[in-house]
Image 1: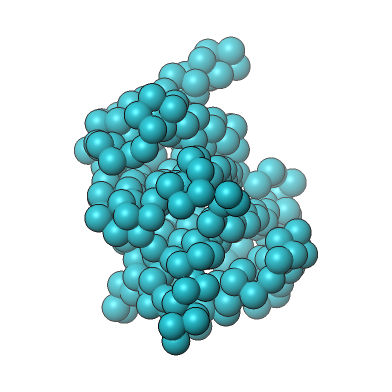
Image 2 (image 1 turned 135 degrees about the horizontal axis):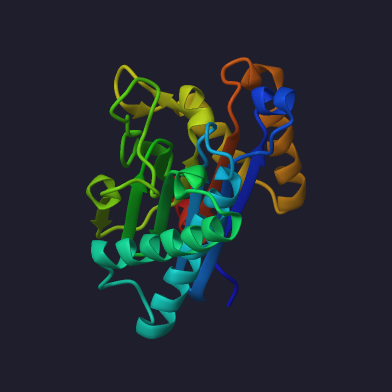
Length: 263
């Protein structure tokens, strides 16, 4: 039976990084685990700190470690029903170990790999969310959208929290919900001003709704991914933020189709 999940993920280097000749420091990864209706979407996005020399590597290592950790958990347990915050901290700990090994090979400090991380494990009846740093998770059920965690601010202005920091565990937010969702969006902070309403701490519906509608209404995911790359590179988006921008869009198709028929 085909997976009910459909997703696309794209990143765009920010204008400031293009001007400086530095790489995109965002990373993302997504995978569907399980079969048929008993499937889980596992996804994460990470935003490397602009001031950290190897933060592009840090964000990539972090995403890889989280998805591989979730995959190993699923292989052992067959589902995520009993997932705990401590399990997620273990995945982040594995990411820190990979970062530390790379830092030792380059003879530099782990602070040069500073990165945030936002993660989702979404199933048909139970879902899990975790975050350290800025960025956001937007959830939808049949066109109604909400934000899971508000982007974290650090101790100083224009700063946030990173998995490479001391005492990182206290900043990791974790939430388990006895519900599935028809739509999931995950984004780095380069898109916060477009996707979020900061006055009300809500999702900006005119940003979310057209993107999900496009995902629902096409079978050409490659073409839609190209459209998303063009959108992220557009002047209307670039003028709102010169930072890197990453967006994952996912939809649970069978539930969405059923809701459309009911409507």
